[in-house]
Length: 193
Image 1 (spheres, helix red, strand yellow):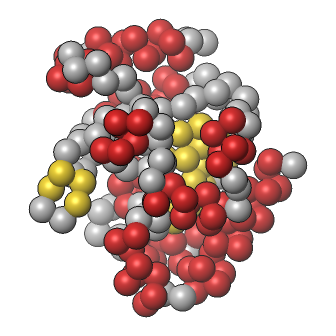
Image 2: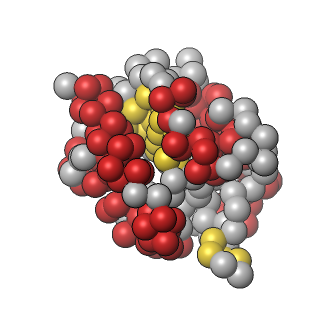
């Protein structure tokens, strides 16, 4: 088994990440060997990168509410791994943050996951993580995947991004908070017992 410290050093030494490393920005992820739940999102937001704390924004508050866990459990229990599709803030685009860089997760996730033997559930947050981990074509709509979440259990649980920008989507799809969120909370609580 490789150590997370060694992998982190290799990520920082990778020429593709030089612009971040030169500015003193470390890769933002968490991989405690005790983790039972892995959360794969898009990439850290600017606030998360500045504070060096993943999901440290309104999206993180909503994600924790959807899972039914408090901040202390989320950050300090050792039960959660956080492996976004890119460990660095990708920058701003016209309608929000840019997409995570291609090839990043493929390069680093398998090595990190090899050192996380207790993962029982991977929560896939948003389209990038969902399509990558479930090996789906980009033409498959995230709404359809999330509505059919049972098909991916027990190992994966796809959800929409908890961003405040998704308020319109949530309003148009009340089944998500009525049916999917309680199922997610139940699965998380079963694992954390």
